[in-house]
Amino acid sequence: MAKQLGERFGISACFGEVTEMVRSVSPDVVHITTPPQNHCTLAKECLNAGSHVYLEKPFTVTAEEAKSLIQLANRANVKVTAGHNLQFTLEMMEMRRLMNGGFLGGRPVHVESYFSYDLGDKSYVGAFLGNRQHWVRQLPGQLLHNIISHGIARLAEFLDDELTQIVATADQSESLRTSGGDEVLDELRVMIRDKGGTTAFFCFSTQIRGLNELRVYGSAGSIVVDVTSGSLIRNERRGYKSYLTYFVPPLKNARQHLWNAQLNLTNFVRRRLYQDAGMKELIGRFYNSIRLNTAPPIPYREIILTAVIMDKIFAQIYPTGLRSSPTSAAVATVSTLPLQPTVQ
Image 1 (cartoon, rainbow, N blue to C red):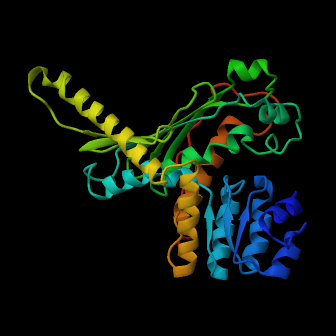
Image 2 (cartoon, rainbow, N blue to C red):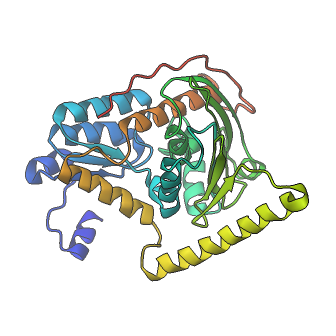
C-alpha cells in the first residue's frame, strides 16, 4: 500500500520500519497515524532522531506517556503536537477571537462539550465488535478511547491544571447491545470541576446523531459553537423591558443564523470552507511553529490535561477486573488531580 501511494504521488522512498526510515532520509516532520498503542514508541524513536512529530488522536494511551513524549521533545529541541484538528475550524477560531476581546466578561464560569459518533458504518463497527483482539478493544477506554479526545480537548483549553472533581457515568446503548457489544460502552457523561471553580460537562453519544458543539458561559455572556453546521451564536446577558424579552432575543438569534449561512457561503466560494479545513489549519500552524521556532499550536499543558482527564474517566467506567461486562452508571469522585506539565 505504501508503494502504491508512493507511485501515485511520485515518492520513491517507502519503508516497512520507522528505524530504517529516520536513518535513511532524516525527515523534518513525521506524521504518526498508527493505532494509539504504537504512538509513544514510534514518536520517541522519531523525536530521538531529531524529527518533529504530529501525532494523531488520541495523542498517547496514557497521561504518563504524554508527559514523557513532551519532556523528550523539549530535551531534543524538537516539537510535537496532537491531531486535535477540530480545535482549528473557522468557528472555533472566531470563538477565541470573541473571548480574547472580553465578550464573556472574564474567564469561563462553565463549559460544555457535546460529541457524537455514528456507529452506522458496519465496516468499522463490525470489525472491532467481532474481534476481542481488535486494537480498539485493547485500549483502556475501548471505543471511547479512540474518539472522545476531540471533545475532551475542547474542555482542557479552559480548565486549570489542577482538577478537584471528575464524576463519570457510562452505559451501553440498546443499539450496541443488540449488535453484540459485549463490554463496550458508547454512552458517556462527565462532570468536572477545577481548582479555580470553573465547571465543565462532557457528553458523548452514539444515539444523538450529528451533535458536535461547544458551549462556553461567562458572567457577561455565552457562546455556542456548532461545529457540525460551522456556526457560532453569541448570547449577551442583558434584560429587556416587559414583553420585549420574548421577541428581541429570538430575532437576534435569527439574524445570527442568517449571518452564519451567508458567511459559510462566502467562505465556501472563496475556498476557505471545506472538509478537514481544521486539519489544514492545524498542520499549517504546526509547520510554521517549526520554521519560525515559535510555540506549537496546541499548548503542551492542554495535551497533557486532555490525557489526564481521559485516564480518570476510563479508570471509573472500566474499573480493574470488570472489563468482561459494562459498568452501568459507574460513578466515582476524584478529590484532587495534581498536574505539573512541562510547557514549552
